[in-house]
Length: 202
Image 1: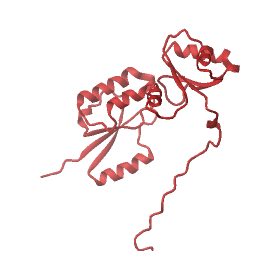
Image 2: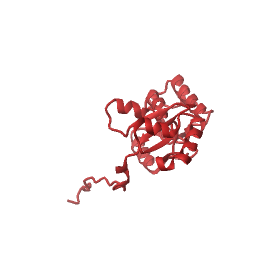
Image 3: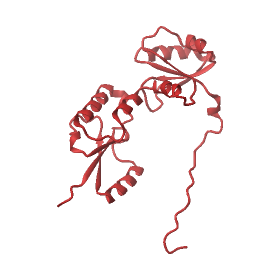
Image 4: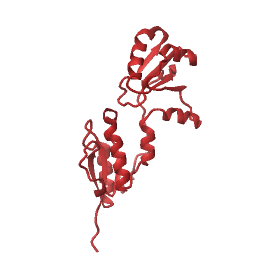
């Protein structure tokens, strides 16, 4: 009986439509196991998701610019019944940064976090007062690429509150206590592994 090769669709986006270098390593490994890989744009409404044997979310980073389409994608994947490497419920949960509050409530150590609902009448100063913070970081509830992520302090409240109100006009805002340790020793991480000895060398 002939073996039909399975196909894994890797979801990409306009910012990075092709597979990255590390994804090519994945391609090589899966090809050896009879699985082909195909990059698929998440914002392409013509894709037939049930043509794939599995789906892996990879580089759909610009989804905040088209939330309606991204939510439609999740619905399409659910209806297609195709296995998704990341559970769709987890993808949905991860879209909004309120997951930071969920993680903190689960016992994960994080900077103190609060979510201000869209349209709130609170000022940024009132948020700082309520939590006793002198410095904070504010960001859109749904966002990527660090867009509109701003470090604020009581000294910068006048300008920062204007941005805060603008963000509230378009969606929820996440505000976190600023942790000064983030500025100390910030640098690249290096992971060391034991080198592989080629057969016949040692």
